[in-house]
Structure formats: structure tokens, C-alpha cells
Image (cartoon, rainbow, N blue to C red; front, side, top):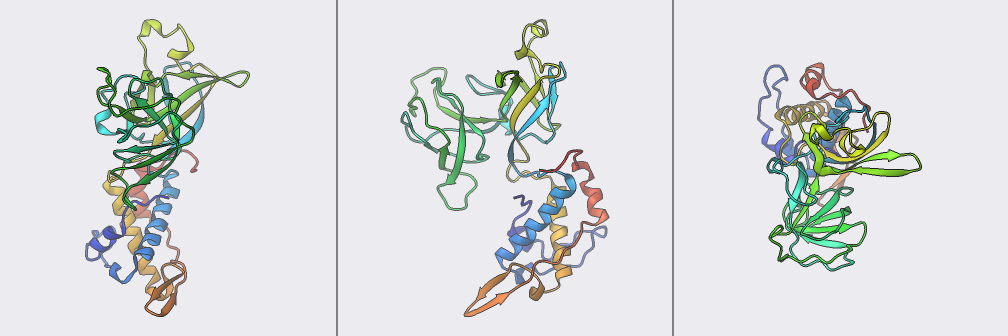
Length: 318
């Protein structure tokens, strides 16, 4: 579920003026519990997603496309997730565009189904964890991610794998090519050409040049080799299966998204007027149990829709 701001952002905005175009009447958000503020944020964020026909929270998805016989493919959802220092690429399974780049902090035995990692930032279930440590391990789908510190979204943690490792992995590789073992998640987990007979032909992700901002990918090989095989193009009229991660990385939402979310929270709170008609179903106050109705529905105003216009996609929302 999207959440473009945090409860602390509402508290910081209690006395902030949003400008004449968005109104200036303040709300004392300190009267609400954390759960109430979180429910308010979730409602406002969902309204933004619904209008834009896409969530902008970090999301891993799998979609089908149709090739057009060129080496370019435009994705339905963008921006594509990409950490800033990943564009230099690397060896082995490391592509030109990464979502996560970390390492494991303890040796991993053959047959293991969990890995202790140095940083869980941007790791999501469904992504494929790639091993850049000199072994022949193929990418393994992530089943779950658990931080060491409860509630943390970065720092050390444990990744649960959907299938067991086929090789042992050591924190000391002894390889000059991989002096420090890396665990990476590429922006594209895979792009596969779906051939007749339910067979697939994988396109090497190392060949992909990613334009993260505009959601496009170029299957790059020297032009003289473009006609030599399926691996160099997206074949015309053949279906493609793509799995990739899109959305903004944590803490990198554009200011417009966060400001519109703040403003919509303010408008919903003003329409709900007081705790008697706002918030979660109930909270505990000492020995008393206080019940609340749902937040009063408030549609996005035309002024907010105009601000969000640059983010609206011409696709169905999923």
C-alpha cells in the first residue's frame, strides 16, 4: 500500500501554510493517534494512485508485452527503480541498472533458504536476488524480507528465498574478479521471449540499457549484429514476459506527490471535523474504549488533479 508521507510529516505540517492555491486553514494533527494518521495517509495516497492510474511506491511486477521488431521497449509503469550509482554496470549478473546492491554478512551453505544481508533497502518479495561472487548460482526469487530492527526499511536483515541455493557462498571469495561478494537486484529481473510450445528464450539483462525516468529499455548490441538472432532485438509480433521493479526509492518521492498527499490529508481531516467522526474503528484511552467512524470521503480537488497531471498514466491501474 502506498504511503507518500509519514505520520511525523503530518505533525510537522500542523502549522504549515500550503499557499493560497491550496488553502491555508490549519489542522492540529496532534489530536490524532498514530494509527489514525496512518489510516488518513493511506486514504489520501490511495486517492493519488487511483487518479494517476499507478502507484509510485516501490513495486515489483510481471507483465506481458508484444515485440515490434526493434531494440526498444516502452514499459507501462515508470519511473523504473534505479539506485544512482548503478549505471556503471559490472561483471557477472550485474546489469547496467540496479535496484539494490548489498552483500551477505555470513557464509551461505548449499541448500540454504535464507541469507543474512548487510542492507535490505529496496528489497521486495518477487524480485530475483542475483549472486555476483564468482559462483554459477542463478537468480533466486525473494519470498520475504525481514529487518533486524523491527520496522526498519534499511540496514541489516534476513532475506528468505523461494528456492534453496545450489552452491555455497562465502564472504571471502578469493577471486580477483569478485574481491567482495555482491548480492544485487537488477531493475529487470528478466525479459523473456515467449516462443510457441510454451518455451521461452531469455534476453540477457546485461544487454539492456535502461532509461529509468521515462520507462524505456533498449536491447543494445553493436548494430552490425542486430539481425543475427532473437537475443539482439524484441522480435515483431512475439510476446514478451517482463519482470521489473518500478516506483520511487524510499525517501525520494517528488515534492509534488508529498505536498498533494499532505494537502488531501488536511482536507479530509477538516471535512471529518473531529475525533467523533474520524479515524480508525476504535482506540483505547485508559480504561475507556473510544469508537470512531471512517474518515469522511473527500474527492481530490481540481487544483490537486492539475498538480498531479504530470504523473497520470494512460494505463489501467493494478
